Image (cartoon, rainbow, N blue to C red; front, side):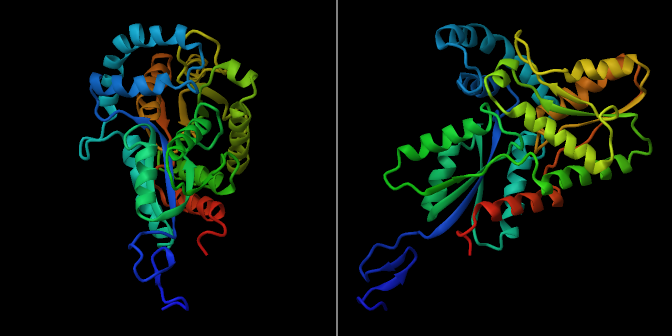
Length: 349
């Protein structure tokens, strides 16, 4: 009993007749880009409509962009994209690789925090939504929530878009939890160490040595960088630190950018052109590492491990390997735990 006749409840000191409510807890929300619910044109259409409607992704005037999106793209692209998803879909759990590994990361992260936080995960586009997971964490008594966007390199198209979703969600709450948004971690030592460990482990088991390792990041329109987006600089620093860690030269491990969309100029050099040029130049064995993707997904498994592999062999190459993303490796969980412990300073003690 307290001095005022109340008792200590779940939310702190409460009167004896106070409703039993959850409170006083800390939540952690991991957020990745997103995924369709199924490898079907209908599910892909829903996902792309949400994704490509975001002004952070396509910042063209709505009067120009939306007629193109709904009149052309969403009538043409979903079928082909669904076929590509089907190539990499995890049939045993009926989910995309991105969803599978994001869920696994959250499940494995929770024990590493010694039960001091409730860990959940969400997708910026698709399901489960950021809004639904924040509401659930709040319902479980989380008065403090750290949101970790799973993008190592900051971009307005990714990290800032997560921030938009988070603050739009809490804007409608009568009782808002305290929110901390973790920053980009492109130069986090634990991140570079995890990349290096997974790369060494994979390359060491091949039975052959690559003559080049292409460091491929997701692309971005050049004008976004010109407008002040730091993404290119973050990618370049990650590539440099990874080379230094593994003793690679810039010639041995060139940086490139994949996933170009549309006709405007994107960051260069393009990954597909770089890979084709290596094959045409007589390079027979290459590896590709994709540090910007925390989890394997359609961009790594289909675009690189299938399509880019074919590009390389058609150009005269012989051996090709895609180094796995961080996924749910022990080094990855250790990295996430270190970031979360830092970002929850003063909350978990």
